[in-house]
Image 1 (cartoon, rainbow over the protein chains, first blue to last red):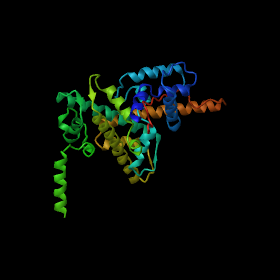
Image 2: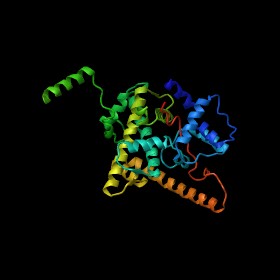
Image 3: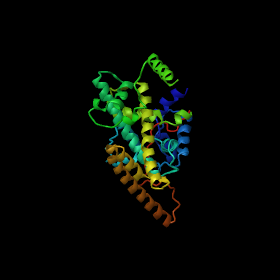
Image 4: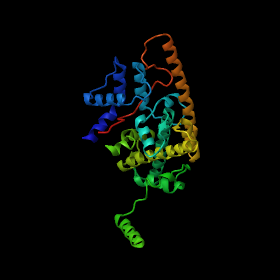
Length: 188
Length: 132
């Protein structure tokens, strides 16, 4: 099952790949099976654009610790600047998909990586505030939807209007059908 | 598989959200997927603006400055400020690395390119190309 694999991978992500790259790392990668290591290795191999991975075992353990710490997203921390959250390949692919720019420089991909990280942090944070105001335990779709439709509901004035198509308001199927039929009738 | 590839990996998105939110916060699966889509849309949104600028200026390559400019233009000044700092650090680290590479080449040492200096540490979280 694809979905069941992912949680396993989450527990011990890149450190396994890092360990492999590092070679003689005494850090145990735990009981994770070869399959996962192969995947991680494959990931490492697939992304030649990725910046060098540190080989020293001490830095691996530092990275391990750091991963568990909450990230500060003020753009000021040196360690924060060195860590990227998303695969550069994937970011590059997304950047290329809808856009006609034939070439994208590495620094641009990196910045988009960091900007996306900031975006998710802020967007989630505000959705959380919205859910708290709503007195709900879970952050639901509607808490995200509110942000794009009515920015005034949140204290910060982040601009999320560009997401209006991404998080449209939900309507009941019968209402949507009625509207659709009406538009067809008007057009015809 | 194609659908997964056009979005950011949800594991990374989920982990980031978990780290930033209080420990008692719970995220519905639908909300997580929505954030994943919105983040992808954000990337396209910014890139499109940067790309248009390059077109207008008859340039073929989008660079870091274009991204920074796009964020400022789109009213995402908060991001532009932080990103400006990252860009500065990135370029410093790249310079350092280039200097290190150069000095190692000069000395004739057959060193592996994985020199731990400046921008040498990358921690990619979770399953990146998890196109399963």
